[in-house]
Image 1 (cartoon, one colour):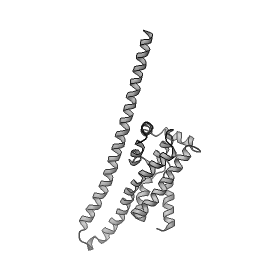
Image 2 (spheres, helix red, strand yellow):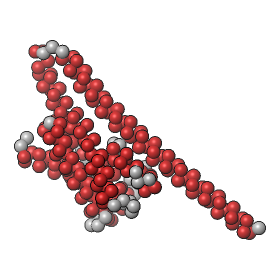
Image 3 (spheres, helix red, strand yellow):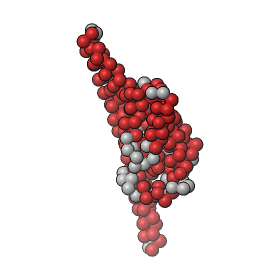
Image 4 (cartoon, one colour):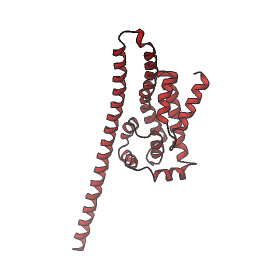
Length: 212
């Protein structure tokens, strides 16, 4: 649990900031389990933010070809990027929502309207959400200690119930943020599609009028 352990955890989380690398969220939770809520958060925050910066810079330079291949398999996340390009203020909400962190790093780097400053600023403001993960990890540690001492303490049921309620609230928060982000993205996507159809009808009408 000393300095080398923190560096090792930071390196693992940094590497998981790149697409196709699994266990990003699991490692953040484990950092809370290993180092506690706040120290685990600091380790995870620094590693995730520096990893996001590295993905952004490399995706626009040395790994541009790899990024383009990755985008072809991004599925519905393409519309998230399109929505952010039309409404940049949506970036913060998208960063808060539980979209795949490492894949989203690459997708956002593909946007021509996002600067490194905006990307890092919104990411830095949204990453305190990692405190939810490290709190879950720390609560696992506390729950393990509780199990060992439950027979010797009173009020154990209340403590256990509070742990479950806290975990449920964390999950509920992420579900709500995901719903809000998806709703905003879908609304912008539908609005853009309607705009294209209206412009198409207008162009068709002008063409018919010219022929007449």
